Length: 265
Image (cartoon, rainbow, N blue to C red):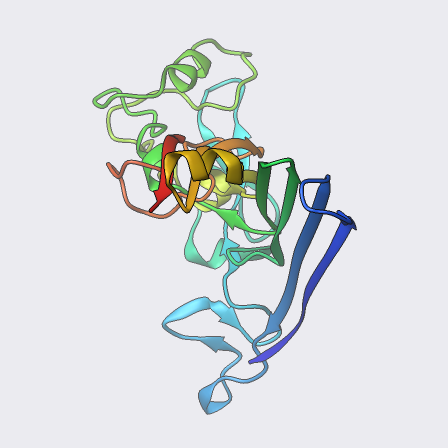
């Protein structure tokens, strides 16, 4: 396997205080890029027999599956493209192709800014990922179009019901797969871009002045308010862009708020 990439960290005092208590702004940016490629497999194989998505000339984690073609407006059935590019209701393993996206991000990193002025401090930390595709078992379970299980309301409302209807949600059925048809979760139907920028942490604090500390007989005192996962920008359709995988029933990350007082004697 061949890996090539860049890891870069840039830090600076955008505004540097000349005296204690004056306005100060420090920033730190982290950037990482990695491109990998499988260059050789054992026995001269071009494809790993146990996992055909691992192929010479492609990165590990490349999306190797059938291409989803949408919903037939006349029948409401899910469709895919076969090996020859024809529309088909039922696809085979031979119809899988390399679609390009990977399950490993090409770019990732973070940005941190710290502002301080007269005892007050504001710390903002953003993290990001770009170039990753993912499938989430939690949301897949709720979009199976099976009449015997619960569905998300948005998915249920969008389901095909009438000939000529243009929609992204196939018609419902009992088994999740049509007669002489593939399962509705087949192919890349459940794979989506998982790029995001997230305000991972924000901390606002106030350090009490030395005069106040002396009166209270304290060495230090800080009041703070902190929030995590406060804001996320992403096209990801499921609960949490950082919470992906085949598992179901796991509680994703939540927004958290903390208020506290730190004192030293």
